[in-house]
Image 1: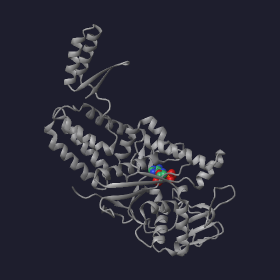
Image 2: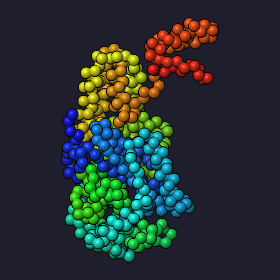
Image 3: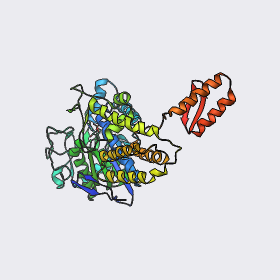
Image 4: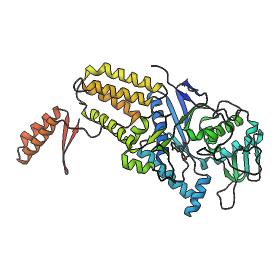
Length: 453
Ligand code: AMP
């Protein structure tokens, strides 16, 4: 099989993927700031990374997928104060809700979640190194990174300045900073704010430092893949590079940077003030995880996704066609005639996904295959096995509720009638006949249940 290639924001090119060590992949994706429910934009980002990691595993890579949880941040402190609850309680509750939402979406690929506040000693150590090497300096309100000392600042995003359009700026204002765009590593706490007594002084971490402290703890100063949505490229990921490369003297921090595009609603930016805001939880309840996964995965990760009823209806139509095909598969039928075609389909899908995760292309291949199968009579075991294998990464197919062939349903009904007439021997004969056709019958308190064997 060929080589996986994908786009890296750092080189701005599609590159062949070669992990630092053999087939081991250390991969980090920025996790949520837990001050509110995850929204569907977050859900899209995390579902697309879940898919990518599952694909890497499908391709035989041994992936360690790490995600942080930002459980201390200005937004958390502000929201906790508004609600009159402690910041820790608020963060704890929304972390729990986030994890539930990810489970509901079947985003299960993460190996380890790491909470920022569990890494204060590592954060302290990193800031001390930066102070010691002259990359960081103290002001009256915190410790800042001096971007003037790091010539590579801007190599990821192509800029060193924030702009008004940035979705998340978080470049902290401070009167006595050396450069306007220097960012906080450590913030001396104001009264009433959470505080950690460390060698840096009583305070709390800046936003960017938690990620490099966490990744250094798990992966060391260099690792394979870092992901997030495009809004995080500047300043967040730029800052991570500066912090870790300055502290370690090693470059690059990360070999491949993957950024997924944003989700809009009805072609508009999603925002609470516009009233077009939908949480991941509401969406999963309304549409079901399979449709959402199909919708998110079937779009290319670098294309902005428009969440609209019309686009969802289209996705639903496609998913229904997939469901009908899958549920019609005869799992007892040795469809040797399909051996070659299923092999070919798998190779085609891998070729598409190896090409910068071309999910629309891979899904188009599946539909072409289904069209071809429809012209060839029934499909059986080979196809079923391949679709189960593919679903290890897609996880939007449904194998659960088999459609019972008409003929079988008639026999089930006749057996019921015979049982009512107490003709048990004949009823048992029918049960055997039904079993030969690949279905098992269970008589339960709620009535007869029929399942594919
Ligand atoms: P946050 O909790 O705000 O830090 O966001 C968590 C993740 O969701 C980050 O990777 C963001 O870049 C991403 N994200 C935020 N808004 C959107 C959106 N509208 N579409 C896609 N991803 C988003």
